[in-house]
Amino acid sequence: MAVALARPRPSRNPIVAEDRRAGWVFILPAMAIFIVFVFGAILFSFYVSLHNYSLLSRGGAWQIFVHPGRTWVGLDNYRDILSSDDFWLAFRNTAWYALGVVPAQTFFGLVLAVLANRKIRGRTFFRTAFYFPAISSSVVISIIFLWMYSARGPINYVLRELGFPTPRPVWLANPNGIFAMLLHELGIEHVSVWLEGPSVALLSIMMLNVWTTTGTMMVIYLAGLQNIPGDVYEAAAIDGATRFQMFRDITIPMLRPVTAFVVTVGLIGTFQVFDQIWVMSEGGPAKKTTTIAYLVYVEGFRQGRGFGYASAIAVILFLIILALYFMQRRLTAQDYQM
Amino acid sequence: MAVATGELARPRTGAAARKGRMDTALQILAYVVLTLVALLMFFPFIFSVTTSLKTQAEANRLLSLRGLFWPEQITFDAYRKVFEADIERWFFNSAFVAAIWIIGRAFTATTAGYAFARMQFPGKNILFLMVLSTMMIPGMVTIVPKFLILNELKLINTYGALTLPFLADAFGIFLMKQFFESIPTELEEAARVDGASRYRMFGEIILPNAMPGLIALSIFSFQASWNAFLEPLIFISKPALYTLPLGLAYFRQSNYTEWPTMMAIAVITTVPIAIFYLIFQRWFVEGQVSSGIKG
Image (tube, rainbow over all chains, first blue to last red; front, side, top):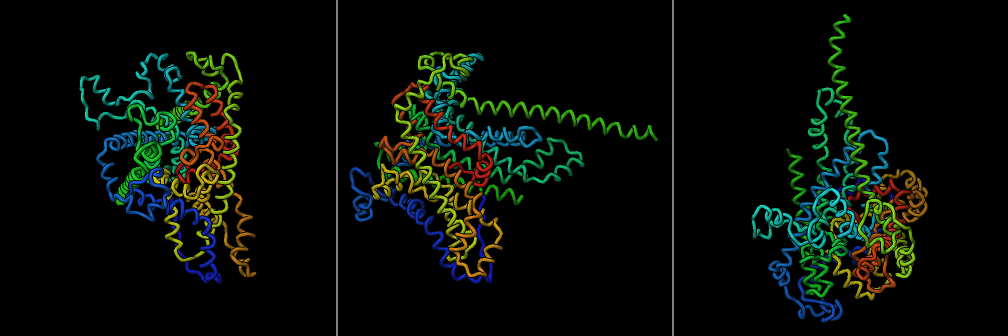
């Protein structure tokens, strides 16, 4: 993350004393919102996750502060979640989703950025075109792709014209894991649920996600490419390096921090995917597109096990993202040492 | 001599020619790939426009190549139908909510951004770090407490739920802090000699010079509010308060196969942001680069 930390500068500023108060006055409006809806909400989330609480049965939320004993269940929600099949199915779905989408969008983003970074006419046009899906409404895109994936939609039309079979049941209605299907063709049955792979339905949403975010990754990579000084390449050219060598030995290593950023952003993005699933599949078929984020919604707001249970899933989601973030930072730190 | 030079020069020109041919080939390859990908990015939007101009009967029929790009018979029936679905109300709600987000974030981000950029006060660094780190927290993680807090405030199913929690955001504060740090301090120092307070400096020097930063911030706020779905979905169940994405999503649930009408709503939702995007393209892209997170 592009974090620029403010460091206190020694200064003979005559209004230092004023700033000590004025600073707080200036940040007050933003902090008021942050304290209630961000910092407070995060702490509240932890607190609710330790209760068995749903609005209908228990009255207002202040109840769990005034009479915590009535709803307190300690870590029971967490225990229930970690021993529930639904959670682990959602975990697998989310993991497949991230494992498929993040490498694909990173790779395509890099390739497009390298191509668009050449001296070509219409570079602005290409950048504008590639980035347009990223600024469009996720609901709009989901509706368009619903139609594209539908039985009589253009994707099946193109496959038919090219002589390929279309999956049956069609795309978003297909709960079969793609690796399980492949192994089935090879005569291997009863694959472990961990190796079934993403369902065809989930894969359809993953492809939409790659389509939407590749442009974002390209734009970030383009900025990174433009920060590599040209004389590094000139020096390499004088030494007789080929284009491929330059790409492998200069471009890729110099882009490593950008790649770390792109992967982090990609992981955070894929772990919170929700809109597309709500519109396109509602978690089905057979819960095979229910991600962790979608499970929070179902348990909290769709006749699930209530706010306490949903909050506990949300906290687990938060911890997973935090762990991924620190893992990525460690890996990049090691890169720099080498 | 002449021969020797020729001998020496030949391999070099050979290599240069090879390199030149390679350059041309790569150039052509770049154009071909970039054009194909650009088409891939545009086609779904083009299809949504053509489908919105079809009759329901044609949309139900099997596709043909021509039908993908041009309707047999152009009709505006779908656009007439969306007004029966109350789209002008959704459009108004989306626009109204966007305006509040833009104004609110402009206020909170300029004040906080200025304080973080220029002032020294206790707790500043830790607070800024805390604000920044919230950028990586998914909206889903805090949706339950947000709902409970808004419910206690009796704001569920009001415009308050669609606006109040979003009047400040980490990215906006970060953006404005970066922007203010790029403004030279001379003017403020001169004002200080005249005995101006921080509040006067902010009002008379900083704000008049903050336009570029404010434009970038407003675009980002507009995009985030226009496309917001999760929070409106959770906080709003009254049809009169639907925003465009919410209206479209619910319309689909009850009109499963009315593709022309759905696409008409999709087109109407996309046009304002597309116009904004074409005008302010540069800001959109730069905002993305410095934040990296789709709002």
